[in-house]
Image 1 (cartoon, rainbow, N blue to C red):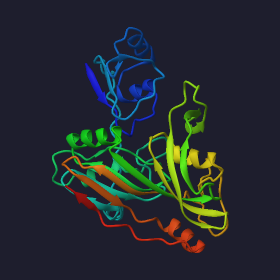
Image 2: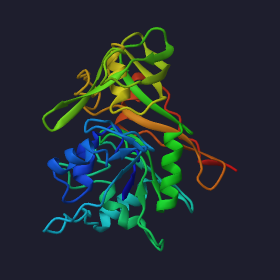
Image 3: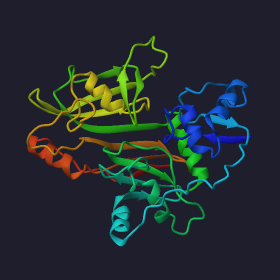
Image 4: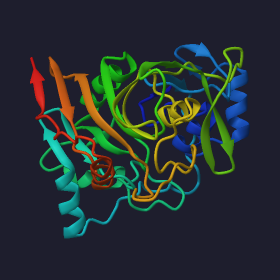
Length: 322
């Protein structure tokens, strides 16, 4: 039997699409037959093609004969001196278990259609003398900046993935919003469902009776505001749905500045980029204790906050408590 441990990079994907990508030679016909006969198991239970995968799920299926042609090789990004320098500059913390990056906005975490430069393709450059290639354990949107954790080994990746699955992680984002939510502090408990549009997907609110809906909870707090026109908000997701923060902010009537897909909030004097930043992360460290990290704001957000007269405190130094 072949076993897959689902990490954050595969969370919220359909089971059939995940397997067709990960298992060379698995046709849709064979996939459907294996599902009908119960030979594909999700967490030891019979499942369906449209099941949504979650971080920490265990997916098993029989070995599939390889295709006649070799599978496509993993994409590796060519690292010239400037690109390597930029990658090393993203590192804000490193120890024996993990590397933490401050990912810039606009850089994808993984490859895809039309995406040739991404973090996953650069990880060979971070291997150094380690016996294993570093591994992604979660992801953030291409246009979102901020904290991204990389495991240094498969063992550390398993532990970090389990921490995300078990909610032993506190994630804090900062976002510049068009408008100010009322009250200034609260919780958004609004289910979301994934809607596909050709090659793209988006998250849309739905009711609790919708079988395709998934629980989505976000705490928010206004940190600063300019009258009722703009505000800097702290967002803490308690679930990890695709585009959760962007969809929840739009549902409050306060879309994130520069978010063309969710509200189209643009204004003069602000860069036409998404103003969403993974600011802080507290996680159970795989070697014991807890680790708290903060990432500096990107230039475009810093400039927008300065224009509004908002404070832009520097990121705190990494802190590990054993």
